[in-house]
Image (tube, rainbow, N blue to C red; front, side, top):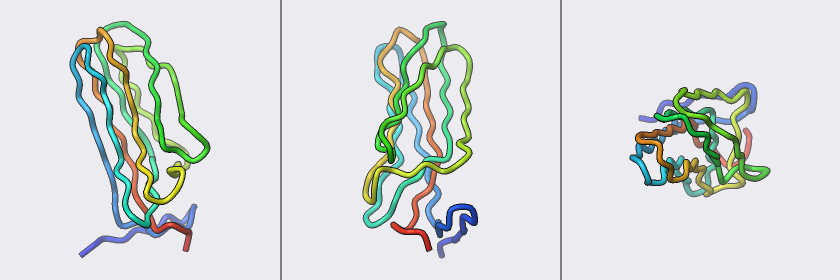
Length: 122
């Protein structure tokens, strides 16, 4: 039995909480993807990034309504972001992915949090 929750602020009935993670070693790209679902819109609600070393890297989140989000992350600090408003994918059946490019940082991880909802507000 699915557990339903209602996002009062945005008017979406949500029944699929989503999380995705990627753990990577030196020289490997690090990617995490919130999966798309047929007839549903994927939303991102937050993310976490960690890394060792002391190098700044460009992190990109793709698949968002309005285009990609790109920012600079500097290891070794953890970055935890909770978005004030759930951000939707660019449309139904579209995944949201975060990529951390290959670097000389020894260990990195990315985690995305979100949900999927019916294609239109109720």
